[in-house]
Length: 152
Image (cartoon, rainbow, N blue to C red; front, top):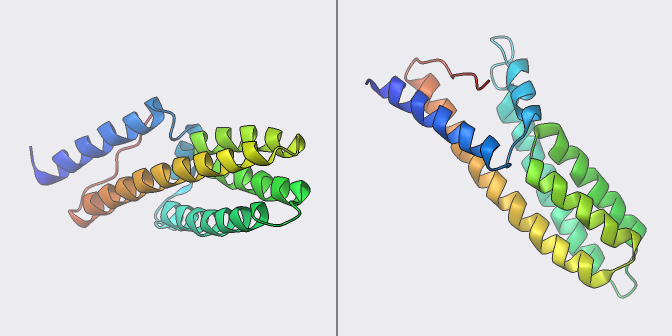
């Protein structure tokens, strides 16, 4: 098997595991379908924006939870935004964690919110790492003149 074939197989195996383990959902496949010759960096750009937004939101959440008087409405707004951006790229486990987080905001439960922040952060860094690996594989396939396989 040539280098492109090996990279494509790696890409397919890795992608498949991301869906099977619930890191990504069909929304990510929809994003990939929007990428074409006129917009070859579409997925990379969307994912990079997601990373930037997420880092900002995680910082905002950490700050908001450390206030003397915690504004649960504000925290809920940040979590709602995080849920939206993770949904839009198909980061399934982050999105699900945000749903749980919002329940604790509604209950004004500080301990629950603190725990959720740690879990959301954990899931975010996991999926960030996986997406970076996936995009690196994609880049290597293209650099070797191959085409990136579509995951059904």
